[in-house]
Image (cartoon, rainbow, N blue to C red; front, top):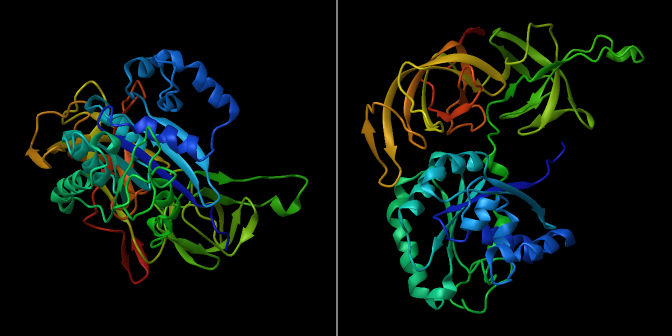
Length: 435
């Protein structure tokens, strides 16, 4: 069985001017992950921020408006690697006005870094972004207490901030939390251990990122393959491919093996896996998140948007959906509006039937039956789709439990959603599956 490349996806968040972009710049700079031309570009842009000093935040703040204002507006992605692991970083905005950008950047993260200014402690944006990380079911959280040099590397101050977090963390669904004192500007405890924190015995930030266990973050129960396309090579020079018909996509959950019984939805037909193909050729088994092509034992009507699932852990299948969403459009969301819903590889028309509540992410309290959801608002809604959707709850499977809403006519993405667990699953009666 081929072992996938170990990639850690993480995002940085926190309030404005807590040092998110500087922290990423320091990680890249001190881990020797920058090319010579990138360093030269930093030196050339030093005059924009004044003082002639290299501003590490410019590695991610690429927009001129970001550099002039000293804030992050859009999501910036950076890639680097160490001998232990590869990394994909999303630098997300801290301002409440760009909550939607933060949700977008963190949606695929394994780990979230919440920066806190040691002088200010836990403020509303700290709680807001921690709550959003919990809402997105990000399994690992690092609370980076930044600018410790400005409070004299006070051990007492560090533990005061830790206590402030621990007051509200039990109300959130985050199981793995790590607190690290650091100075992003000076590099203390970012890549190298700091001599200023002899009272701190934990790892550096990079050390933790390299060793945090993420292999179990993927859902390996309940095989799910949303079909992206039907693979028909019809190669006239290769007789073995003349009748080849496979179903390609990225495994969204579980493990699949040759000879395994699977169920095809929405056809509701049971068959077995005849062959599994990957980029490297045939394999006996594959698992999430590998991209594969399955050849089935029977000819079945399957097309893009269908899903091939294991016959043991059954998903939900209904037209009535209950979800949490982050609204991203300037025009508020109201009940009765129609959109397109894109779920895995399937797109279907949908109507919003009810606004259930709106979440105050600062207090974690909800307001029932709001009249509308404004831009950046987070709340629960109910939807009705034109065709049944095959899905899992977002807490069970982040890939088959997420969706986006698309405005009809403009094709603008107006919301990102997380499906709540289904009340009913695909039913099985004596081996006959009822959809």
